[in-house]
Structures are given as structure tokens and as C-alpha cells.
Length: 155
Image (cartoon, rainbow, N blue to C red; front, side, top):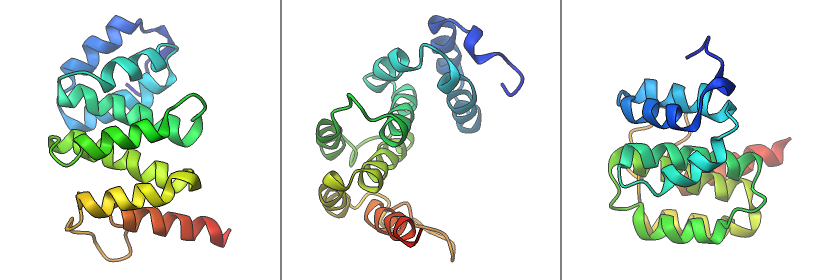
């Protein structure tokens, strides 16, 4: 994956590769080092986010998180929060993790949605008790959001 030409893959090839990549690290590398650099990234993001396979859907949410952070124009952030609020609590682990990352990124990057993102995280309590090593930021969205915003304000 690190030596391929990401732009050379067709949409269907990437879809087949993702569906075959069941190992979490392979899945993450495929999304981050290949799919994100491919011209079909947006159509794959939309298709995968709604896929019934939670592993495939987690890739869609990872791509959505990237958009939230780097290119949010055209995204319905309030709508994403609605979906996260309705579905994240009972989602399978990998999908839940990806949705939680998106929740945190919305809260970190978009002050107008920050209070709601924190509120959703506090009510759902997803990853609240996740064991976090000292000097690391918890993946519990309210803690994560507040810490990253604090760091941004120090700059």
C-alpha cells in the first residue's frame, strides 16, 4: 500500500480491496494511504458511510471525519450529529470508534456545534471508561474535545 499509485485505482477496485481488508491495520492503511488520495474518495465516502457492513461503514465514517477536519463545506454537520446521536451507542466496535472520532472532530473543529457534540458524548457515554495511559488524551468525546480545544487556544 505504501508504494502503490493511489490515483490509478478505479472505484470498484478500491471497494473490493476495502471489503477484503478485514484486519484493522490493513483497513486503516488502505483508507489513509490509498483511498484518501484517490479521485473517487468522495463517492466512496458517501457509499461506504451508508453500507450495512459495519467495517465498510467505518471506512466511510473515517473519510467523513477527514472532511469534517479539512473540507467541511457542503457537509451537514448537524445531520451527522443526528446520525451519531441515534446510532453510535449501539454500533459495533469499529464503527462506533469511527463515529466517535467524527463526533470529536466536529466538536474540536466547529465551535458552533461544540456544545452539542459534548452533550451527545456525555449522554451516550461511549468510551467513557476506556483505559487511557497517563499523558494520553481519552477517546471519550467530551474529554477529547475539551483537551484539543484547550491546546488550540494555547497556540
